[in-house]
Image (cartoon, rainbow, N blue to C red; front, side, top):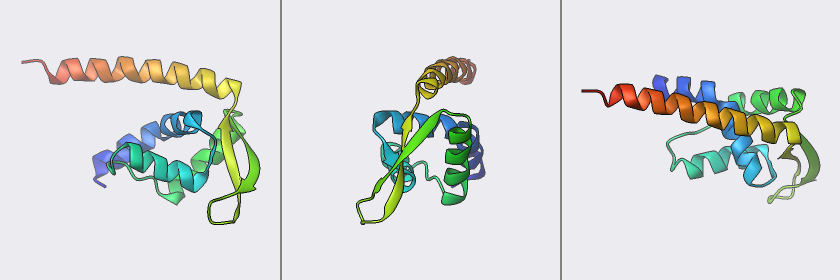
Length: 110
């Protein structure tokens, strides 16, 4: 991962996690794999970034969890969005759309 990709990911990691969990409840490693899969391997979230972000989102009450058993038979937290998390995802997505549109307009200016 390049430094630019790392900086982008650090600034948008919460949004990516919220969106991924909105698709379906999943455990932390599953979140990481899904982000990698949907981004076609362009984004890879390392455990050292993922788990602190999950903890931060949990502390902000944007996500909650239930204990379950993962595909490999291990006990794992399965995260899901709270109502507050859904509202945050909507507002952050709108903000991202505005920002990315503005940056796109600037980059396409001739």
